[in-house]
Image (cartoon, rainbow, N blue to C red; front, side, top):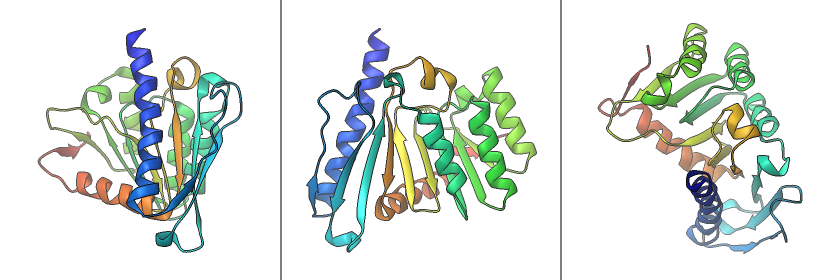
Length: 210
């Protein structure tokens, strides 16, 4: 019970942190739509307008699967939208439908890269899915450093990024208290991708998955 509550709290904290970064780190004014109950109404949007994005509106969307909000469909839609690049750093990846969407992105010519957690990669279900991705020609890396590769991030075309507590598993979709956050903001997405690039090129902390 403690673990589930902590997992949700950290996810909600991620939403708040993203909003603060976008609001203050980019010197912009923000307008928040706060629901009376996050668990009883559809996903909300935080609209941000600022100097660094010109006249574009940067949107933060958040979804709670235990409120009946279909996170898997949102994630698959973003994966399907990728035209050039798709970078994924995910702690746990066992959902075959998400795995199929990733494979299909690769097959249509998108440059896909995946980083995952070494311990999780040893699990039977994740191992099978990862082996399939590697066999399809998708490069996969895992952490070799002592900590966890605990990110849950997807970046499509360096234009859209996702984060939150949501792992790419059926448990996250159907059982756990989770939050899934979509950042439709190129500045944020490029920052996420820059961090992914550092990890990908870190030969002391990460290695090819075999």
